[in-house]
Image (cartoon, helix red, strand yellow):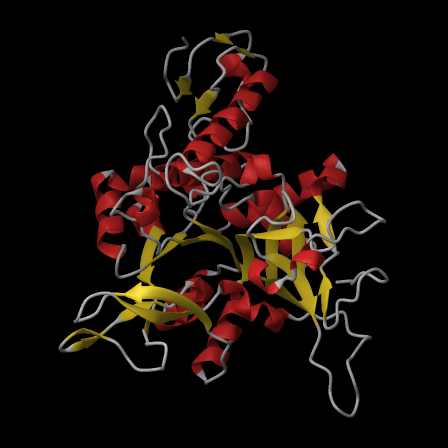
Length: 438
């Protein structure tokens, strides 16, 4: 990856600039990546990893986030939307590779839960008969825990006989995959790469063949990430950057090295620097947001897990929270690992790919009614996107709210012409398989 030159002084951290922008990619080239991605899926060489350890507390729900209904006309949960996208993707992979549907290997879905979400997640899948997926293609595993501390470093008792603990963050996924035996099972099954995402992204195109096809077949990456441009300088998102080693007292900083891929949290970036604009592009210097949509090679995951199990470590991040204790909630510290903490270990085998926020990213993080990243904004984003699909396929949509297209009907807007051509949608409508037109 290359770093920018000139402009503000960034010290040992430089903006990441080597970003593939899909809008500038010739369609024929993108089609080759998509076809390679479909081959990986059809041959069982790709799988999907879901980070689903979070609860829906901010949303006013005691259930896991994945069980949440964002208010779509279908009232499908986030888990159901994602399961149906996976089913559609399998069918597309079969068609693209000329493989009989029965001969396509099931696209495996690995779902990381936590102690707080595990039982309810399994119950949700059981209650809905795994949303049409084969049960053997879905593997659940739990992330680890770390003890909680007081501000002066003392352990906190949750009960008289047990310590207060909290999930170890999405960065705990590496050790959890290794300790559960899943990484070895992946390698034995011939799985070469994973597409990874977070459960609260209502637009997540899990297993995106264009993305995995590029990372695997062209970039030969160990770590990849889909990124979006920052919406505004103060947006509370992490940004991708390149970090060189700290200056040595004898040799000084290694200015020749472009640095290792890392993510700067918004709290780490000086506000003036966050707002600085590159005059050559008109964009922010630190422009590329981390939306936790990643690619990993399985060999790299195994190497990282081996290092971590052998005692290699990444720094813990501190979150100050009120911790339930034997004497009631007390101020304390939770420690967590972030999934991007290990990215420097990938060296130069990384790839950043810009995607369209309107197509790939609508998170559900804040309470209903919030102006940003809420169920309301996610619902609006999905209905607007799907209305665009339907219009592009030759229908007229006059309903302001939009149209909901079932993932079983279309993964990314494909295949709608024969269904909607010439029709008019006056009311909010759910386009499902075998459902009569309005």
